[in-house]
Each structure stands twice: as structure tokens, then as C-alpha cells.
Image (cartoon, rainbow, N blue to C red; front, top):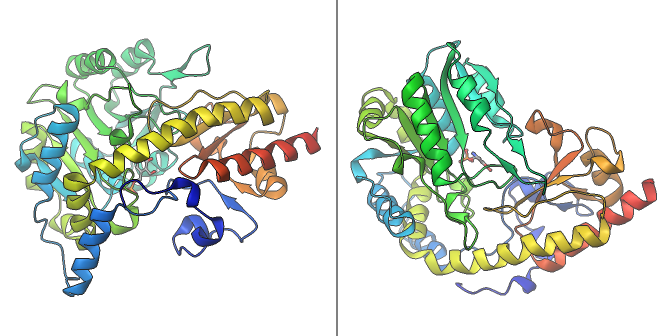
Amino acid sequence: MTAFDVDALRLSDLQERQSIKYRAYGPDVIPAWVAEMDFPLAEPIAQALHAAIDRSDTGYQSGKGLREAFSDFALRTWQWSVAPSRVTGVPDVLTGVDWAIRLLTSPGDGVIITTPVYPPFFSTIRDIAERTVVDVPLARGVEGGYSLDLDALAQAFARPEVRAFLLCSPHNPTGTVPSRAELERVAELAVEHGVAVISDEIHAPLAMPGVEHTPYLSVAAQDADAVCIVAASKTWNLPGLKCAQIVGTERTSAVIHDRLPKEVVYGTGHLGVIASVAAYREGGPWRDHVLGILDRNRHLMADLIAEHLPLARYAPPGASYLAWIDLSAYQLGPDPSVMLLKEAKVAVNAGPTFGAGGDGHVRLNMATSPAILTRMLTQMGEAVRANE
Ligand SMILES: Cc1ncc(COP(=O)(O)O)c(C=O)c1O
């Protein structure tokens, strides 16, 4: 199903799904929180999974074809040449981030993040890897867009306790896509101060038309202290199948090879590997179709906000399908998601969980049909007006 009809999506069908997006709330709530897509699975992926089931191929993963498929995809998509030997399968991106932090830093070291940022980064750094969070908030532009604060990053990199920068590129929740020049500056700072860069690029294949994603490792030196963690899971909606990849430089891939516990690699899902290979190799037309839908949705969102929530601030993301909406002008308190769930019956993510700069904001998932998106914003507008 390459060019599926997005207008054919029905909430009643979607509510049959058993994944967390549709199970966390009752049928009266439209879920727009966790980053799952409402779209039908890409046909080549569905075929590969059906074929695996038909041959009772449900054993442990062998990694067959994964490294080569990613390497070919990276070259086609970003002109980024990655030796397959530098790609290692892991169960998911957060496991990759966690192990990258453990392998490249020591307990107690400072790890930079750029808030507002994907909430599990805090707990992964603090509770799982037992490192310290060093916050360097993104800079906010006049249009409501965000960018890396390179001056503040330079200061933070110079702090003795800082040993790593957990870069989120493209950035969740703001959708910011750092430019090549910005990443080159980060790479310079990293070398100057001996700071490792761990780049979470899970949203990278979803850069919007006309927006260029630059893989961090394509600007870092071959011997840089850096890794990139990628996956097909966000772009082709496969997160439940458990397959991501860590890509290292010459230096860090040797560290991963020697020190990443084999059980971590074994935990990668067999069906995830099969689906990811199909996605990277044959998922191009489906991805193009989805990028067209998401591009229209991010602009539709701007129109819907102007119509239903005119005091809200929103900048269309440069990548992916998350809308970061500033509702602070409506004075709904630090966490407007509570009222929106109760009164608008729309489940969005709570801004304060994204750290500094999150108060008064919500994150809304736009990977759905224009009709469902319109219904969400209409209900949100009505609830906010009733609250005034
Ligand atoms: C930036 C970012 N990193 C990691 C993840 C989680 O990925 P995984 O389920 O592969 O751990 C997400 C999920 O949305 C994300 O947005």
C-alpha cells in the first residue's frame, strides 16, 4: 500500500489497535500523544512480516541484511557513506542512547541535553546510566522556532564535568533540524573539549521536503568520540518490533564491538530486523507519500491554530510529525494537557515533562488524517473558549 488514502482513516478502525496509543484512554478520547502513526503499514513491510509468519520464522534475530540495508539507505538518502561493519543492531533507540552514555562516559559525568527535549532523556541519563544532566536550553526565535544555542553550548562544553552531548537531531519536540554549519561547530567544540557526541537521529528520515538533515557522523572526524543512533521505527511506524542501530566512527565502533554486552544485541527483535530491512530497502515510495501527508498536516496545523487557538504559538516542524504548541497565553497553568484531556477529550503530551521551557506547552502528534487533526483542534478550541 504505497499511496494509501489518508482520508479513509477512521477512528473506529484505529481504536481496534492494541498498541499503547489506542489503549491508554477510552474510546471518547482522540489520542495524539505517543509518537505512533495512524497510517497503514507500508506494503513491502507487511509482505515481509506476513512471509516471516508463514514460514514460522519467529526465532532469535540473526541481523541478516540489516547493516547493509542501513548503509545503502544512508548513502541514498543523505550521501552518507557508512561501512556496514560500523552498524550494530540494538533493541531500540533509548537502549542505544543508554549504552552509548555508559560506554563513552563514567558515572557522575555531565551529559548535555537541549531542553525542551524528549522526556526519557532525563531518566536515561540520571536513573539508568547514573550520570548528571547538564541543561543547555535551545534558543527561541521570534517566529516561535528553536535552534541550538551555540554560545551556551561552547560554555557548557568547557565545564570540566561535561563529558558528553546527547544531541537530538532532528529535535523532539520542536522539530528543529540543525544545519550542517551548526553541527560542524558542535564537532569542533567536541574535539576542543574532549566531549563525546551521542546523536539520536530517530526522526531523520522524516525531514520535510526542502529541509536537509545532516547526519552528525558525516561532519565528525573518522576517529571522533561520537555515535549516532538511528532506526526505521519512527518513519515506518515499527517501534513495537524492537530494532534500532548504533553507528560508530572508527574509534567508537571498536568500543561498541568490544564492550557492548552481547545480550543487548541479542535483545533486538527478529521481526524488527526483517521489517527494518524491508523499510530501508523498499519503503521509499511509502515514505515519500507519508512525507507529503505530514508536510500538508504541519501547514494545516498552522491554519487550524489560527482558526481555533489564535493566541497559541506554533512553528511548523522541519522534520517529523510532532507539533510543539505554546498555549501559555491562555493561562491554563503549567500543564494544559490536563484540561485538554478532560474537557476537549484530546490526549496530548504534557509540556512540563520536556523540562525547561515546557510549561504552558503541549506536544501533539500530527501523524493522522487531516479530518482527525481538524476534529482535535476544533475540540481543543471549544474547550479553551469554554474555559475563558
Ligand atoms: C528523539 C527520540 N528518541 C528516542 C525515541 C524512542 O525510540 P525507541 O522506542 O526506539 O527507544 C523517540 C520516540 O519517539 C524519540 O522521539
